[in-house]
Image 1 (tube, one colour):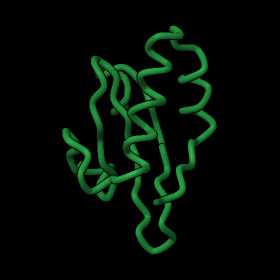
Image 2: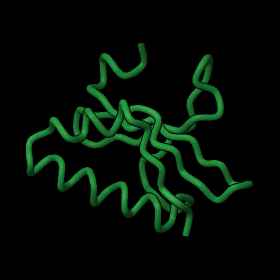
Image 3: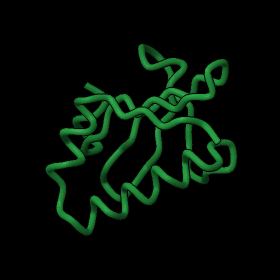
Image 4: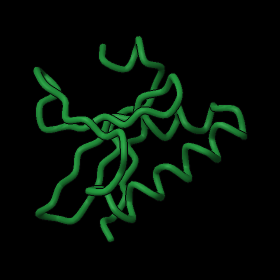
Amino acid sequence: MPKLVVHSRAGRYIEKLDARIKSQLIGKLGELAKNPAAMPGVKPMAGEWAGFYRLRHGNLRIIYLHDRANDTIVIAHVGPRGDVYK
């Protein structure tokens, strides 16, 4: 099972979320850490985000990097759909 690392910016955003949404999001991140290859809804990103993946959770987007060499998933950014890509 890969190690899950959350960037400080993403962690601060998660902490500010409503308790219900936060618990759902943490559950989804746990599922991602258990089996990233079988996670539904994951899409590779292009352009300046090449090499990263995105996962949808309602109107939130989770942008992460799966470092297979170190068996680590780095949650780089979490935010609303319109703002997360900026």
